[in-house]
Amino acid sequence: MRNLIRHILKETTEDILKKYWVNKWDKEKSKGNLPRYDYDLIKKLGLGERWEKIMDYYVEYMGGPEEIKNIYTNFLSSKEFTTEDINDKGIDTGGYDFSFKIINPRVTQTKMLGNGEPELYFDLQITDGYVTLMTTGQDIDLTDIESIDEYLWWELSNEIKDMMTDFTKEISVTFDIQLWDVIIDWA
Image 1 (cartoon, one colour):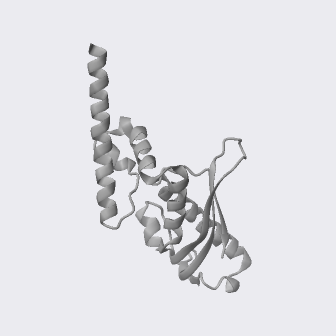
Image 2 (cartoon, helix red, strand yellow; image 1 turned 30 degrees about the horizontal axis):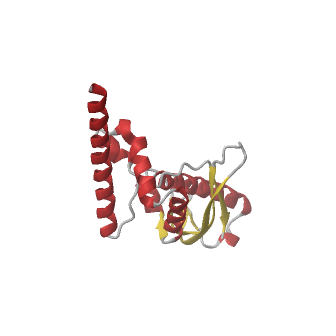
Image 3 (spheres, one colour; image 1 turned 30 degrees about the vertical axis):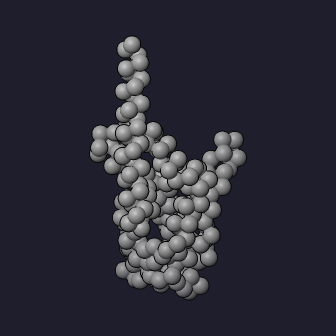
């Protein structure tokens, strides 16, 4: 009898939990927002031990893993981002101040380790902006790559790609995608 009661209580709790999150995501959708998986909110609500179950609800709600990949890549390519967006994710941008577009993003499964880890590929286009060099205080126009010294561009390019990797990985987590790697080409 005890086991039956425990089973019923567990099912009831799970139903209430699922109903709460589905209602929350429905409200986000009705406001024109894209529902996202929010681990910080889950912890804040004291549900940290149930994060995996809530993640399962999210994946189901969004239409499954393949649909989530499509939604994620559409989100990345749907707008122009800025270094302010990067800062909002807690990523330091140093002396960089620019706008950018993520072009042709695609998530593929690598076979590198045989586990099918997801990798993100995209082309990056800086549409406006500059970097202020810490050493000289000089502003470098990031939209005119051809005028930048080759060795300086190599350093700037790697710093920008590191920021983009961190940024796209931070966003991917809110779509329940754990990226193994991010490969960026210049548009």
